[in-house]
Image 1 (tube, one colour):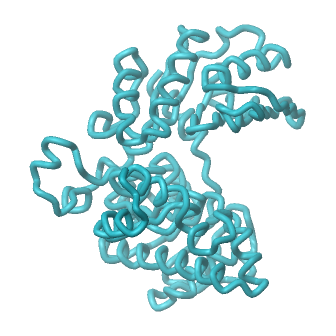
Image 2 (cartoon, rainbow, N blue to C red):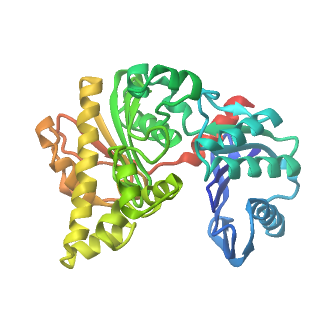
Length: 395
């Protein structure tokens, strides 16, 4: 029985799960948060219910990995590092270099680092974590699993922008998408639930969390997705604008007396979305609560969020010339029956009939009636198991 890590390194976090493979049994899981701050938090769950959490100085991702291995051995989760023979790393941006998951080498790590211009908050951190794992488990097969690779099946008419073509040729300016590991997992799980080959299905997957994206999956392949050159594009998100007119950038820079365009992009990424519209929070739960208390801007934020998701679902029904299943996943998608209801009730013309009782869930469930022409399913995502499966495939 082999042990495989699934590692998800964010800009200031490190999420991990350790599996017995190929049984997909979770041995331990946890999260390191607030990396780079004096009050970093390390949390780990193991032995079917035991849990440990501590607050300490975690200056960088290298220290986060050091703590992870220290506690693995302190709590006897592993006896020998050689037990770990596989490590999968989620990588946000693979650009045009990585069309699929890749076995990690020094050259791959270098390329992941260089692709940081497409995901500056994520790729450099992910490269650091790969190097740290190389030091500690050098004999393990390490695999980079790219968020963008699932979307490399998009046709040119869907991934190219209407810019001078040489900008794509020389600078790789195009749509890449994100959340591919999640979209891949939930679309395949949806096919399993309905008992049909995914090749025969048209599925729209709605990954709705603080970051959100919608993907059209036709026959198991991504044919279009809402996020673009970066994860800033698409629907309204927790703190991100989603789609805007590019002319707003120079207009607002002049009005706000902003000299550096990076400052404007920071506003679009971190101060907009639900937070910017509501003035309350980037967390959907807080915005819903404020709306219920009569906060009109909070209600407006909810309305805009729902509106943008509905528009993308409508687009993708057109892109695929139909849809069989709509999937909801991620923090909002999995947990907010209210938002699922609002989204589906607004597109009932397509033959979607919500079952209120079935929709009252946070678990995996079909949430439409048996008579509904289009099926909607709530599926908690599991990017980590998808990463572990990719490691098994490439060992």
